Image (cartoon, rainbow, N blue to C red; front, side, top):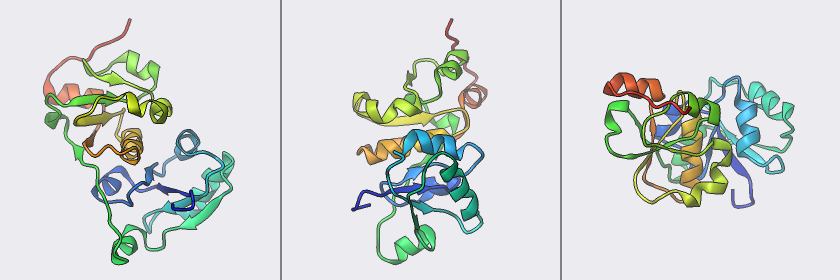
Length: 190
């Protein structure tokens, strides 16, 4: 990281939320991993991967290379456990229930068409792909980041943490989960 490499953590959202290498970018390993890698990490940046033991390194490498990421510098052997064992600090980003949002500011990072179809009333909307450029525009204070299912939201929260935000959490689920839990209606853009 000191030499400019990006640490890309491919853990599931719940694992990343509990503890991860400070400054790492969360991009859970799933079929769209390559797409979000392309959105969130510059292709010329060397990458160090953090993965769970049950996540296939060949799958990670294949997905990265199919979108032009050839500078895979390696992986953190032993993951966050070895990081901590070496005396290095880990950090966390809470994943919260839709019932726990309350009056906290919410940032919806879904794509425009998803947001327009249905969203939580009063939320701020910035697409994930534009978040790094617009992070400084966000007001200070606690913020819950949301998407459709939590994966992109954790990626956004990790970018905000890299930008210095410490008062962020991720919604477990999406807008419909919030509506179901609170009994409130979603808004639709017309």
